Length: 348
Image (tube, rainbow, N blue to C red; front, side, top):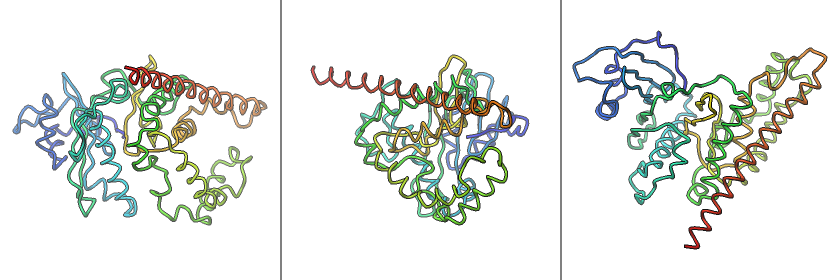
């Protein structure tokens, strides 16, 4: 979910609500203070437009409305449209599970999750989804969430070591909660990058090598110690590597953990968003993806052409080692607490 500066749009809230068809009535009810009445077209304090997100602002209250409709799905390559729509439905299902409201109404009504799990995410006041359609472009989804910006959270473009540690703690809480959960392990895989969701042409060794050659050309200094055939080698090994990751699924993973999908505060609190790609997986998939895509460049190298390159590399390895160890300690502590709680419950 991304946004653009407020100055890019001053469309009245009620007009934006109408864009979110077929959820006009539901969103009007959920947004409450934002919509004074069906005839009122007064602009809000701010309205941010972004990819698959509309942020509504008002003097007393603001909410984030994440809406996905036909235009968003149709803009994607045809091969990715169905997986994208399925991911949107998966996110709605996840947030409904936090309040015991299954998306298809077939739950047991006792799906309320512990408060500790709900604290990892923004409060969601409305979860909307149209029925499954033979044409996935006809399906639409909307989530109404609290505005975390107003609550003092921010979305950093990259993560400091302290913020990365907090994000890993949040992920460890998610992983520990769903550890060995039969419902999760019997469900779909998580991760945006699971091979079963990727276009098959991405596995073509020749094309992969061409893409890698482009990376090497653009970042020659950074890539000088890497194999020139890395693109081809990874494409040829992709199925085997993916099989290892798939066979070691033990819990629910976020599936797309990166700065754009989390909010943080200066006191270390972190909230996770965008659960479209959650599902069963190896928890270190989240850890590796977060660390490799999110750490501030200053933590990895202070310079490419300085005389301290070896020291820089050693420092980067230490940062990774510290953060991985931090995650492992947090996960083990949470799993121990979970086991003790289960033991006490069993002994009653």
